[in-house]
Image 1: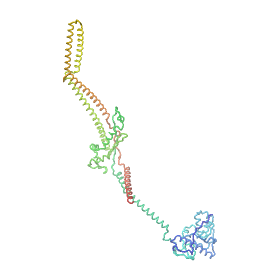
Image 2: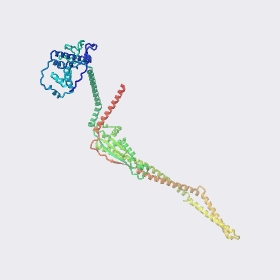
Image 3: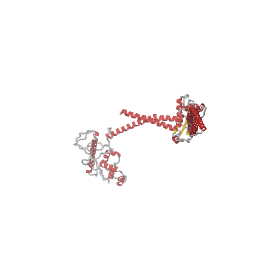
Image 4: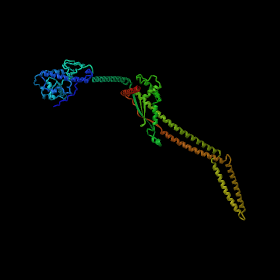
Length: 581
């Protein structure tokens, strides 16, 4: 069994209280509620007085019907005039109805809120139910639906003691008791044109929300328009060009590498780098630069007709050259359609040649490979030729100088009528030495003969004659030796000159030998510096078009236009914020 809900407390306005506040209850919500409570209380007292006078008073206790001091009845419903009329009628004879059975009411599954509402409605009609289900039963016996929505939304209109409605702006009399009154059934029940603060606030919030939504929609529409004009429309134009207008281009790819000859005798850092990609990196870079230069473009135009091919009417206007293009214009198209890349880690050169015809693309690629091979050969040949030229020049010079020294020696030998002046001088010296030895022996023999007391005169004379002859011979040899070693044409002078010529000839022989060794070493180095261009991937004509890449190019155009629009929007927003601040 549910407990009886506690009634809300209302302060009843008595007639003795001064009416110094607002004269219109509708302008003061608190005064309106107090007036409605007073009118309701007065209506309940009036109804009970009529019921007692007619002899059909309700069985409820008077103490429970009368409002307690300091309390007022709850606010009446919107159709309380009809409930008052139903309450003033005598009860109809009770019949057996299923909806008036307590057990049946309990089984209906009414919520707690509905039961509390039924108790409040029963208390408004002067009933004293023992429980919430009893309140539902009593109200149904009176013919009142406690769960009808209009019962809780009726307007309350104050009444005078006689039961007549008062004007909304009339001030209640001082000697009347202000109790809650019901709204008469035939009265005016239209809502007031004036809004309450809550409704006014809700309406203002709704207006603000609608304005915000409208402005947001307008901004979104403007944003969509800008995106469509600056991003989607250019992207659509780019995609339409790539899919419908662009001429299909065929790309021929090839790969080649520059190799160095085997270096069997290399030493040092050069020997360590031989056979790797670092040994030919400079040559690879030179070949790459040559293939991307104007020289290669002009040679390709002369041999294969590069500008004539890209000036055809079948090519779309964006990729087509003018009928008589300048060198710069043709070179711009050449840079777009000839791509050469160098991989330093592998030492491989990759070339891609693009043309409107696959066969022509392969021909262009073959021609460029032949140009690259010729350039590699020219580079190594020039280097080897320069080195060998220097070595050969040094060897020729040494050989000429050696020949000159040898000729000078021969001339000196012919000039003195002797091939070996030193041998002549040495012979004279040996003769003089032998004569001097013989002279000493003869003098010793003569001295030995003279030491005898009676020497043999004939032997003494013979010894003296031998000493005289030896002295004469020695004087002749000394004179001859003197003639040979003195004067400009002496054998000594000639011998010195011949010795100097022989020394010079020996020096020239050493220089000639060194030049010969250097020339042989240079020839070996030149042979090791030979470069070879080897084509690892030959150019093959493609069967399908390589360019344009329609989807990728369209997506790239979208990203570019979106990025440009984003940058411009951010810049404009920043500038606007700086200006406004």
